[in-house]
Length: 424
Ligand code: CMX
Figure (cartoon, rainbow, N blue to C red):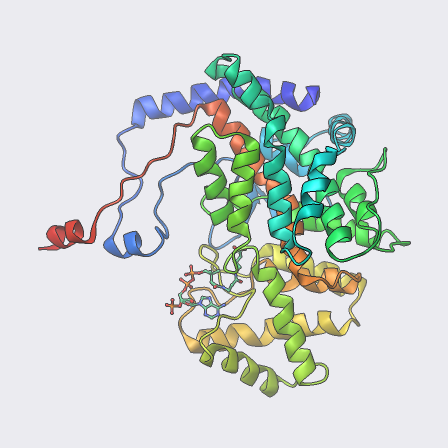
């Protein structure tokens, strides 16, 4: 950790000076106007918060610290977390130090397993994952240091400690939940010397002689890591963290948002939709059959999962990366072929339907097909995988917000009566 913490300790004074200079000189400059439509419409497009770890230009898709995510597809999650936190990719030594740091903290306290074992056997894996995180809140280094009277300037340091402790344990917990919830046999302990993603793949226990599944997990964890600050999970984490709630409370809050079907849960729904299609037409359907199936979904008042986005207006580059991985490694797989075919038909249908502002696929449209191919067929688990990755984005944002002294978030709400007065 020393390496990552040192790298950040060098950057923080520069960023603090930069931001305080900007606010002092240009603090009164307007960056957004808000319409009544936006106030009722989920604040879409309102610029009212800052996130420096990543951004999502609608016409490009995710840039992590200004690097297009498509250029990070050969990187590891350790590279990604280091990049999110510091703005730079690590060298080989720094990457290794982070891997070792995470590996040394991977053991999960035994009370976590007891709590999970006490939950009803049919609990949703996301409820189990969130519970495990929340129950570890007593471990928070931030709370200990806060109660001991630490200076505001140091808030980021124990937040970094909490973040590394949490990140290190998430794959162990997530893999343990997979094996427990889906009766896969005993838990598999973390193995020393493995990188974060490899260890996760190892603990899941999915047969993987070629190492392709571990590589798929590496890609999965890199691609889902962050998506700027305003999405439900990042924003929920930021909001709760702004009250100085520690990393355990904050990440748990964010993940409760990720568990919603319009956000992270869409990946569980998406593969379901593709498999229903496969079942109905006993394989890959014709263009006409697929078009009709998409219309039936829309006419039934449902959304087509994996398509559309609140910010993006092009094909999600994360979908492009997953599709490329699948088409390279198993182009003959019928589910992969279906995902590919859906991509050629559904945007046309959504355009004709005329409601969705973005008819293109998002990250969830292809990721499930990869997991399914490697034998992970428990859809309700998919959002847990997303969560393990998204924790990197939420935690890096939390560390930086603590370092920058971001205040408690408190936008002003207004009443409908007040709005009516304004328009009179
Ligand atoms: N299928 C059918 N209708 C869709 C649609 C889709 N895939 N995407 C958007 N629409 C509809 C909306 O429901 C909305 O309809 P109403 O006016 O009747 O309410 C209309 O099009 C306009 O919506 P929008 O402005 O284009 O999209 P939003 O910003 O409101 O919502 C999202 C974005 C992602 C929730 C929406 O596109 C959706 O529900 N997609 C399917 C679910 C999904 O894939 N979610 C995962 C997103 C990625 C993530 O965050 O994890």
